[in-house]
Amino acid sequence: MQQDALNSFTGRRGAHSLLFAVCSAVIVTAVICFAEHAVAQEVVYRDEEVKAAFIYHFATFVQWPEAPTPAGAFTVAVLGADAVAEELEAFLPGREIQGRPMQVRRLRSIDETDDADVLFIGPDRNFGLAELIRKVESRPMLVVTDAPGALKDGAIINFQVVDDRVRFEISLPAAERAGLELSSRLLSAAMFVDTTSAISPPPRVIFAASLRNAILH
Image (tube, rainbow, N blue to C red):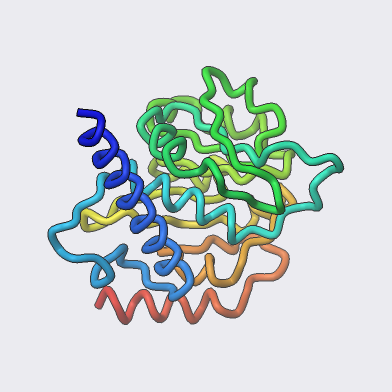
């Protein structure tokens, strides 16, 4: 029984590694259809697994402010999405950003964010979303949401499920308010980038939109 349990854990760990590698490839190559050809058709991931993988890779494509010295752990805070938090807890240990070990913090309230670097607000807390984001929008924190129209509520990145695939949209003005610079590769992988009132819309956004239209049509 112990060997069976070990094999089960090892298999799950390997599946997570493959999933996170695929998400990285999606962002780097600006392919917006998640894992359409990169993974065998019989391999199916739950939305929570995909979202957790993307959240990790979002953090790797952000130019973060210089960490204080001594720097604590790089924290991904999760509010209203226990299943996503569980997936992150299974993969993040042992990984680093800016030389800081990554950790997950499950929140009961938005007031517990403290010095978190990434905040994911899940669908369980979509009520009053604008007010939740308003409480943290002045911090250098990457706010990721999972709600229709969340960019208008102040989210920096928002998930959408289109044609049974997890995709994401980005708000450059929200990123600028938080003092965060997003990689052009991340912008190119988004299904939509809001540049309204943005200081310097990246030229690749136009290319990304053309590429998206070519793929979808």
